[in-house]
Image (tube, rainbow, N blue to C red; front, side, top):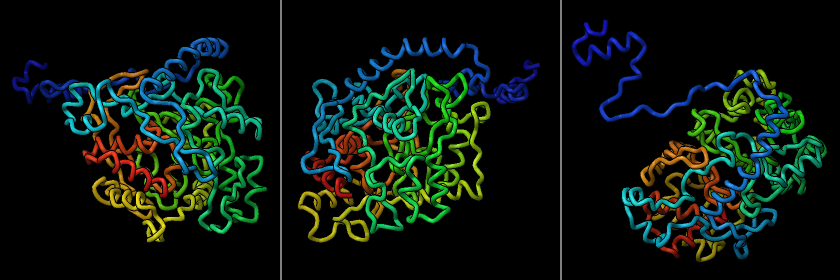
Length: 469
């Protein structure tokens, strides 16, 4: 039948009729890699005891390999910044931690073109996408301090038998973080230094929130079944689990740097690690999800419960116990509370988000001028909240060749939403996947990607300004 079509156009038409048009590519262009299936198996083919033994036996090697990767990419020594702490007093780590290739300096790297960096393999490994501690497996993974306190308060165990969190605590947000409410700025930290859970939320917030908001908070601290923590045998907790609460990751409406994989990319090798973003300032944000561009926190809340908790798979959600929230009440109540979460106070900033005359140091004022000028930060992070509520593609793939590292295929990040920078010193590590450990790393990253050619002094000034936001 195909022989009746004599021209390339006719051949394409014939293939299209046979459902094979996707097999035809422009000359020299290969099809994008794809997995065998987008679907997870529903029926378990291995016993739970066998899975536990197999993955527990593999765990020491998996953890050691991720630690080796971090040590290869970063300087992990603890070096606190002088005179700078997070809101509740935890030290802020200082200095560039990303390691350079032998013989390179940040100045020589910034002077090279993207093509030169790509061809010579000079792009710092710490600037590459960061794989999940076990990327082929993925799933929610919590720092030990969060696991311990949650178990102490609620007797729920968020530990996994197959994996441990390996990023050093010094590079993570303080725990538990403060909570500031936009409706009651006079109260300061309403958490009173406690981790807010199902065990204490009512005592802490009764008399501060209205009943709808209290119900929304109750839902945010209520555990629901999730991919790794549930009652089915394909979980990754030793005992059947009630599940995970929103505030297990977004602890106290902020973050504990728990990691996961995004639910909207296939195959597994191309999925990005996502480091938990802060919920502070949700009321001024208009995009939710690092890449999904959901347009309201209500949409995101419902999406998470229906499928993202289960890696974007509604069939598995049904199997493990999907929590279908009622949009007109439950979702609305949760969103109403989240939109009260405020940024921490920034005493040096005026009502328009800029340094108040006479309050900033000379270095901070120089940093502010750079932020709104030569460094181009304000192009995406304008005052007063330091976000433009848009998506931007930095096209980092200009600087490196695709590579597979510990199960992650690095091919570029694509469009990523602009995260607010208010209170940024409280939210390490940085970027959507946590690849940048300090603000100094972040400045070096954008100096290279944007080609701003900042001097050493200018970089230091810029960091000083961001620490007062």
